[in-house]
Structures are given as structure tokens and as C-alpha cells.
Image 1 (cartoon, rainbow, N blue to C red):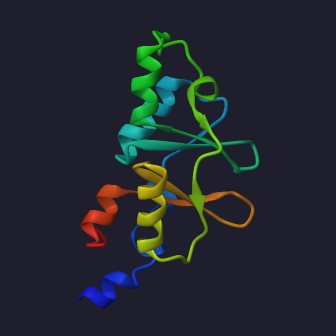
Image 2: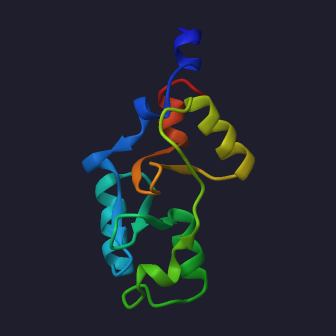
Length: 133
């Protein structure tokens, strides 16, 4: 029902635990692309040694990297990721995630705990499937 969809939380639809794409800051771009392919979300989070979010790498970032002519076989993820990605805490409404994504013109969002550790991620396809948009 519409009421149920409006009360849906990001926690109910996000990709979490082993489904959350994640690579370390030391990963190569090739490793990040493999992780993105495995998890099928069109992005991967990039975390530091403590598991805190330091960046994101998306399909859009890949296109921009290719346009720059960087050798994707040699590049490290840290040099091509987008630092300071847009995040939201768990427990918020999926409709709020949609609003953030529309306002910021992004296709994906990372859900982080109070220590800035990623606990989930979602994209516009997840919101579509859940009937939020």
C-alpha cells in the first residue's frame, strides 16, 4: 500500500553486509571494478584501514576516468574516487533518500553509522523496486 511504501526505511532496501560493495583505499581500480560487478550496484564504497568511508567510485566516475585517458590497469582507486560522498544515517525514510538523491543529482547513496562506517548503500533502482519513486 502507499502508506507502507511511504514509511519504508532505507534499512529495508539497502544493500548491506556482504552485499555492500567495499574496497580499501589501497585497492587498484581493477579490483574496485570487480567489486562493483560482483555487487551489481553501479558503485563501490572506499574505506580507510579503520573501515571509515573516505570515498565512492561510481559508473559515472569510471566514465570520467576514461575521458581523462588514465590507464585503468595502472590506476589506484584513491586517485580516481570521489572523496566525501553523500551519506545518510540508518533509520531514515527511503523517501528522504530519494529527496537527497534528486536534490544532489546522484544515483546512489551510502548509509553510514555514527563513526562514518558504511553499513549499506542503495541506488535509484532499489527505490524504484521498492515503489518509493
